Amino acid sequence: MSLTDVVFICACELIGLGFIIVAVCASRSKNPLNFWAGSNVTEKQITDVKKFNRANLIMWIVAGSIWVLNGLLLLCGVFFPYWFVLAEAVILIPVLAIWYSIIKKKYFKK
Image (tube, rainbow, N blue to C red; front, side):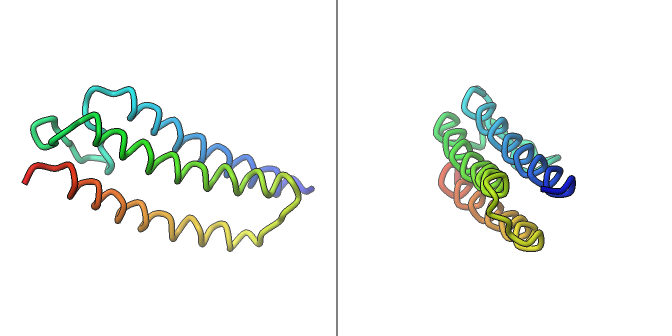
C-alpha cells in the first residue's frame, strides 16, 4: 500500500466521519439544521423541528456511511480507481441537494 493510498483512505474516513458528526449535531440540536452555508432556517419556517432534524440525521448518516464504507473497502484491499470514488462524490452532492429539497417540502410550512 502506497502513501497515496493511505492518504486517500484517511481522506475518505475523515469526510465520512465529518458527515456523521454533522448528523449527530443535527439530532441533538433544538434549532433546525441549516443545509447550505449562509442559509438560515428558523423554527418559524418548520412544522416540526425534531422530525426535520431527524430527517437530516438520516441523510447525513447515509452520506457519511458511503464515505466510511469506501475507506474501509480501500483499507481491506478492494482498490477502486480513484476516479470512481471521486465520481461518486460528484454524484453524492446533487443527491444530497435533491434529498434536502424533499425534506424541505415535507417539513417547511406552506
